[in-house]
Amino acid sequence: MNAVRRANYPLIGLWIALVVCALIWLAPFAFMVLTSLKSTADIGRSSVWALPEVWRWDNYTAAAERGELWTVAKNSAYIALIKVPLGLMISAAAAFAIARLRFKRQRILLIVITLGAMVPVQVAIAPMFTTLSSMGLLNSTNGIILPYLAFGIPSQVFFLYGFFRSLPRELDEAARIDGSGNWRLFVRVILPLAKPALAALFILDFVATWNEYGMALVLLQDQDARTVPLALQAFQSQFASNYGQLNAFIIMSILPVLIVYLMFQRFFTQGALAGAIKG
Amino acid sequence: MATVSTAPTTSRPTHPSHRPRTPRRGLPVLGALPFLAPALALYGIFLLFPIVSAIYLSFVRWNGFPTVPQIWAGLANYQDIFTNDTVFHTALRNSVIWVVLSLVVPTVLALLLALALNNRLLGRNLLRSAFYIPAVLASIAVATMWTWIYNPNSGLVNSTLTSLGLSSWIQDWLGDPQIALYSVFVAFVWQTTGFSMVLFLAGLQTVPADLVEAAKLDGASAWQTFRNVTLPALRPTFTVVLVLTVISSLKVFDLIVGMTNGGPAQSSQVLALWSYSQSFINHNFGGGNALAVVLLVITLALVLPYLMWTLKEDER
Image (cartoon, rainbow over all chains, first blue to last red; front, side):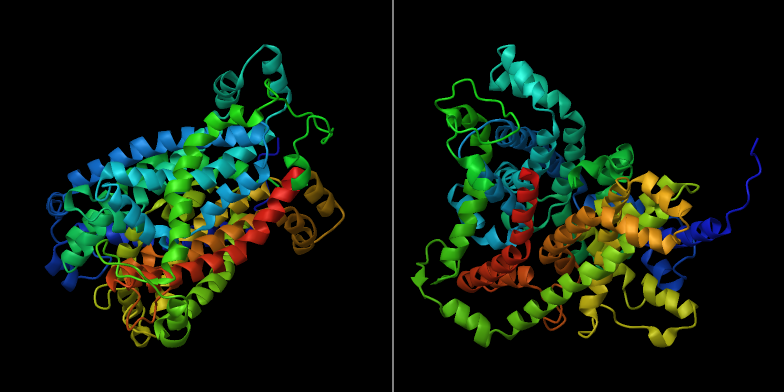
């Protein structure tokens, strides 16, 4: 048995260096948690790494109330839970058509759609504001779903196109011989095979939708329609000097994406995203 | 390539690979249309149309209110930007600085981390997560966190410097026009490095293990192996990382709004934010949209060649 292996000193050194770097990388989180549990007076007086003199758990309840956390979280959840599945289905259908069906100008269509992923929202935001306003969809959680869907399409179609192209052609032929039409081929054959890709996109898109700020800033100016990032920004400008509650609010606002991340961690760090970068 | 595949084609054998034929070969577009229609409608109305409108609006004078008429102004908005608008020059310079720095700093850092974390190490997944987690946070949350970290009195940075006896290094990180942009950039590095690292890690899995083994057996040094085996295999990953970095660095908006709002004295202004501010704060829709068009042209000039190249490769 090769139980005793020679100590690999370079690797141990590397490990120590990485652990130190990781601790530095995570220090902002620890600092935020500590601050969120201190009173304002305590923050001014004590050192940044000192434990709170009194543990102010009430910072969380107070911040949630002042920042109307429940209202804005409900809005964000509503938008994400409608936008993400709907957007995925729309993108998958389009990617399927471009990757597996045959029609004129396919390539140009793919290029035009993909280009949309490169465009900063600010390029289109002023006319979008005018368009939504003329449709009476400004300041509405339903209204903002439409541009969210549109801006999600390019990258998702590009990703799913790559995935669908990698599936063997013989699948289509077999399905055709069985007499399947396009719909059956899509729903019965292609979609089930795309489950891992769709799951990865679901998570990425949920996080992106929950975090979106640039469009919401312009299109949701009504108090009742605000999403979590808007509320966080408002909290910062209104109660900037109440550091304890501000940090409590930041923590509560990022909790949903942290939970999603921890649940689906392997998608992120173990290479399930590898499909995105085929050679 | 593109011309071949878009040709009408039933009579001409075009491709060696057997593509499936739609059952009703007369009207293939009709078969595809139901799949494409929802995506195309949304894309057309809420993405393409606004961009085309932005180009039109860049040629008018308008304050954005629907009751006020739009007055044709020709190239006046562009002339304004390039000759009178000193903020535009700052914003353009800052955007260029931002793109260049983003191509270097987070990319190199991410590659080093990926190489290190590709080794078999105790708690490897935990370490990967530590570096990746900031990437899932909302930019506006990162901005709020870092504003507090940079707080001149009680913030993490200045307090740490004081306790290390480096009080002379203390700065008003976000309040000093000389350094505000770079302070925000540090937060950007913290937020984006993890994502590039994950892409590099995925790319490293495509490096042929037997080749690395063979190089080692031939007595190649670690550096030689990296230079001649790993790096060439990472070429496609590099392209993806660099393109995504360019795109995300031209899109940077939330972080700057949240940390400095372009200040102090417009010193950290960037194109996306200046375009937004002109339209929605200064009610100069013409100027704002002219800036948007400039931003669009820069973006397309940087990423269009890549896109054409990928799709061509893909055809092979």
